[in-house]
Image (tube, rainbow, N blue to C red; front, side):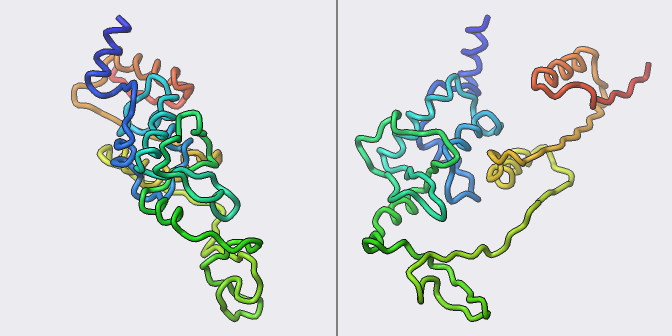
Length: 231
């Protein structure tokens, strides 16, 4: 029976044993200029737009093949930038080289190629930022103009962000991809969900039991479940 279920899920494209690098390129979140490898993995288990994986380790092969084929770049994060030039079009890059982490990102092909071709900073001189910095007196000058140090200033810093509103079911996936995906791996992210449904045909006892079982399976509990009955 399990084999039949798995075969049916594969047939409908809901369960996959392998993922093409082109799938990541086609479904790259529009709002992201870099995509952490951990967020890539988490998306396959969170977004209804993505199929579920029999083994999440296959993503190492997917990422390695994408880097080898020049579909996207691979680079580690560093304070204020990246750890060297991105890896792209590298024939010797394999799954064993792929790290699933918040500190490793995939870059779109154009960005990765541009960063790889950019000349390195002179020896002994730290890479300078192109941002404009302000001196204490308010006078603006290019960062590093007077001292060979990297100066970056955030445009705006906010400690907390929240939103509350009604979300049509047709936009659930877009809401995740365009709004939540950038914070999906942040431990401070909290979601509160309330759904309400009142079908004309009513809700059967079997449907209610299935919902309760699903909530318990997800570790959410049924304490918040409200049911109105005509009985």
